[in-house]
Amino acid sequence: MSGKTTRGGGLPLPVVLAGARGHGRWHLRNIRRLQDEGLVRLAGICEPDPLTPAELAEDFGSFGTFEESGESGESGESGEPGASGDVAGRAPEQSADFGALLDSTGARIAVICTPIPTHTDLALVAADRGVHLLLEKPPAPSYDEFRRMADGVAAAGVACQIGFQSLGSHALPAIREMIASGVLGTVTGIGAAGAWARDEAYYRRAPWAGKRRLNGADVIDGALTNPLAHAVVTALALHGATRAEDVGTIETELLRANDIESDDTSCVRVTTPRGRVTVAVTLCAERPGEPYVLVHGSGGRITFWYKLDRVLVQRSGHGPEEIRFDRTDLLENLVAHLTDGVELLVAPESTGAFMRVVEAVRQAPDPVALPADAWATVPAENRRTVPGIDGLVAAAAETLALYSELGASWASPNEVSTG
Image (cartoon, rainbow, N blue to C red; front, top):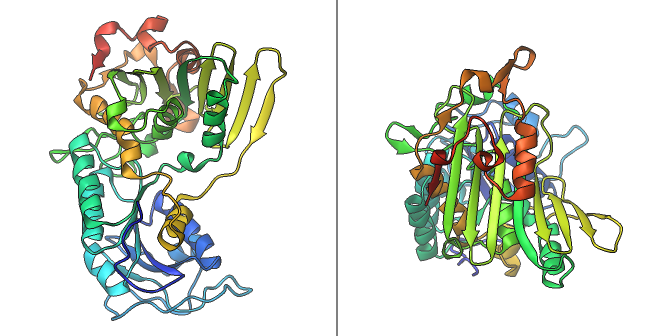
């Protein structure tokens, strides 16, 4: 669906970024890249505390002038960066009032990279003004909030891209084509594994970090739903389960080694009419590695390291084949959608199955704290590990089994909930 254009003007499209610190710094750098290509222009930044000139220069470039909100009209057009790296023209407007900033800048696109509980309300503020969206993942902390956002955006007639960058990988359509052509024989299931490490500071970076709820509002900032959400959504996409109605039963095992509310060591198994998808993740890895999705077939397997756009094909009667793919940036795809009618890569409805998983995690009993003898500390890195978890994560992706079914001493079947 093409979003209706309610504000005039051609390229570069003015963009407002809500949330420019933390992961928002990545968006700043990406907007700068696309600005240099003449596709967008950073018109405004929404933060409770404005970025300092030094902060903005670190990830975007410096300006001859630096002004906060209160200036009337749009920010000036930017020129080509000079030899010093400066960006000609005025600095982006800054304001803590998102709606006012969209109005004063004449934004065509809003990039929302704010705390999870704010996503729906901010998306609807933009949609009500006819501003198109790139909304960071997870799109909402509950299925009801997701529906409120998706339905509101659709009613407003604006385009919305959900920020699952892995779904922009050219590997996905290539793998789907391999599956359809019978390269693997009959697909017997899909597993995904993510073994990452996060230190104590990660859970103290923001009031909502590691929380299931905050001030009465859902957050659901767990390993499956936020840091390793790409493992879940990518596995579901390769399985052909993208819409909410594609999902049957969902089993979860949610545990935590850290002193947090949410899960840091978890697995989920989604059953659909096509088969099973099992995703096992941890933020307490002994030796962190690249997360991957594993497609099992009767005649072979495909391993997809989705952050690297790297694919390994192993099949009967052939030697292993490794392929690297390009990736389409989601903001760039949104611009192409608005200017040339190119199809959006990650429209809200294509994340409905993922949001069913989020809802299952939300409705599950609170994560079980691992016993003290099931985790260890790494003082030099100020973090906790779960001995043996790396192998369990890999085994779950390999066998499509849950931790309790693999004999983990700290997991038991009554920690499994079905949604």
